[in-house]
Length: 373
Image (cartoon, rainbow, N blue to C red; front, side):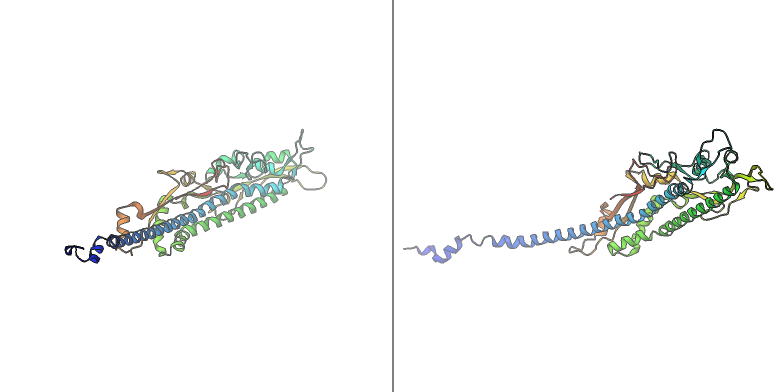
């Protein structure tokens, strides 16, 4: 028989059972696990917001720098490829006759005469002979080439020389027609360059594209990107003062004039008298546009290293979410105790080093925007 001191059998079995022992620590661990999951959620939400804002600053900087890349590429076209194509198409198959004028006459095209006199730039090997190294070796012939880096060109410019009039059956009336076309072409090129410079100035005056791009990608107040715009201005410097038109004010040309009268009369080389004063057209304040000069140091700044980064280093503080489960002041914590409160991006205008993009000389319109987030 069981001993009375052993107590009721049912109570004794319950005291020795281990089936419910996990319940108590589980009740203690569940809130801890819940808080841990919520911590992961809050951290992920903060990381997501920072990634979204980083993408926004990258996109804003890329959009802004594209304006400068487009300006440099279009200026390179105006400086080189456009005038070369126009004059080569117009005068590349138009010969200057010299039969009976001189001994050992060598046939030459008017495009070659104009190029030799410095009327337009082209590749040294001809209109279709670009360098195999990816560089457009377009330039003016000497001695005019040496003066194209300055706003003070040699005055007057001789469109046709006395030697041209002596060597070829080159008529003064034909020289006048070519002169008028030359003026029209460079007036048009000047208008194109002036228009694209004004577009750049309008877009960059307050960096509206940059601010709106950031706003569209984040939904934050548009003025939040003002610090990004300021950092762009500091890194870039005064871009507007780095480019200017090169302008020609006076011009002279030679050609053969008939003396008049009846019968066969000799042709006499004559030149413009007085020297032609070229009308002022945009973007020149005096004279006729010839090309746009951009300071090489500015182009270098957009491409080369700045501190440890290639190009322009931009930064801004972003709108860190303040609401969270623990009421932690993330803006103060991240802006003052951690560099994570600042967004950074590096943007540059460069291109494939083998192509050597340039505005002048060898104007090669292969500038590209590259970013290093």
